[in-house]
Length: 409
Image 1: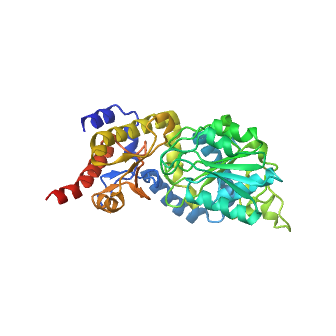
Image 2: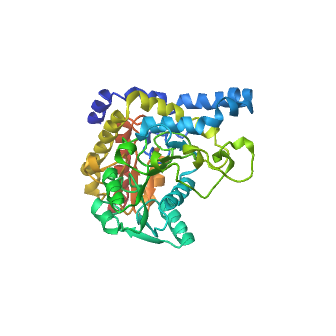
Image 3: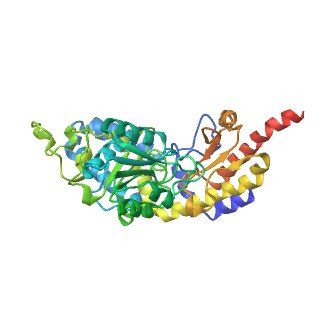
């Protein structure tokens, strides 16, 4: 624990942990699942309550004219500036990641008419694969699969081997959900563009933990959730990014009143709104957009480089601890060891982890399990201390040892 104490003492972000709600009747002593669901901030709890009493309860329907109608765009611009590396007018907060993937893939097809292939990797997050398969089936398209390493990810050579002049869009995760592999997004964009295809990134496991430069990387389309490192709360709405040059030509299949030009004219026929607003469909989820605002403000204060530095330090400590304490017990590292190729979480493999996870949760240590044998550790840089991480790692070691002790006795 000495190393963890030293790292906490010199951590420039250590005071941000105090801004999070950590009181729990279940006595959580080590929360290592920030890559699935982030903690709420104390300010967000107050802000959501105030919104319900003052904005919603006080202004009632007047709130739409005063702020809410434009919030998906203004908050999208904030997300773009603070964590995406995207200039204004290219990001919107809208539906779930799944729905936005559907819209964006169909939008990519509208931008590349006549092309008949979609490229995706077999170890991409299930919803990404399912959406690709459903669109391909519906439109009579071919899916070109990349056989990626579950303990790594998609490299440029693998991508170049499957993208052809028939490919409309390449769908990849920037950080692999299982291994934490960090894609070279700029290289992926170049590889797709060499064949005239578009690149769509799922940023769910990278936004808020890894610096992003979508404009500079020439990424075409992107989406991601806000309930992980942005702490927007369970099911908080996702965002969509569309590179400015594609906005005028992009069409999607879920035309709704909120994305129509002059929505309140209530006229016949759908005419797309100018710019990124056209990607909206139904009434925006205003209440669900409130909680992430405090985290965006914190990240804006410290900068994504500082967040990334601590993230690397946390995952490096986790891997060092795993090598020392867990690999002698049969645990295997299932994530890249090079921090330049690793996102904000790491995965450990052991055949006993499925049964071990509930025991950890009962001890107040909360990682998550991913089949077939993976235990994911997702420390969140703003809310996780190094001591908290080591407390959880020690508990994992103890639980892995426990069956052996029973057998020896």
